[in-house]
Image (tube, rainbow, N blue to C red; front, side, top):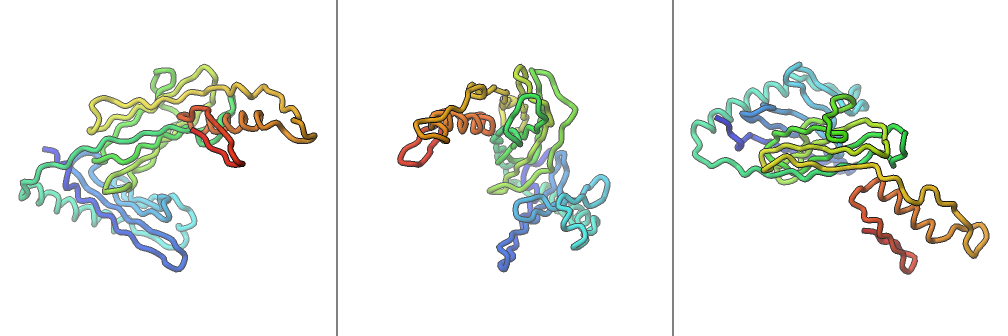
Length: 249
């Protein structure tokens, strides 16, 4: 028997009004793997989480390590209690399970792409429920198992979740990459494609325009288009300028 909800999610939000900072605490338990999670965020960045298998606190914001301590057993005790509550709810409740919410997937490079220069591909999986996910990196259709990393499940909007997966890679013109996402809310695996597309203007020479020492507007727009294309694969390349303001699609 597998229960999707309630998976006992807890989201407690506190504000530091003096500095305008926000701290988020999130905890969930469920009857499917992963069976639970306990974590804190600070200003949108993962601060730390409790590794329930190793029974230790894992820090991701080093500045806080020496500022204060967090005993992993505090989080483990909360998880144990939440699991007991979940089992009681399963036995007593006749509620129908929650709807599976499919993820939204975006793939983009960490830095502007230069062929032959090391970079990192980021696969952002967002707005899904429940927190059960399988993500695979593919290069030219073949599974990649080296140079990969991932975050834990992070709180998103409306009691949903998001997650980041990373792949270090060496951009080559002939290579194409896919982030393959499997989730209960999808009828079939979702493949989010990304490929290196050499900019057609990279070999162009920046020539002076009518005014000495300046660069032609056409070349500037071309270069801006190349940067946008490297950062946002869905960018169509349409860039216009009107009344000294820029717009792109």
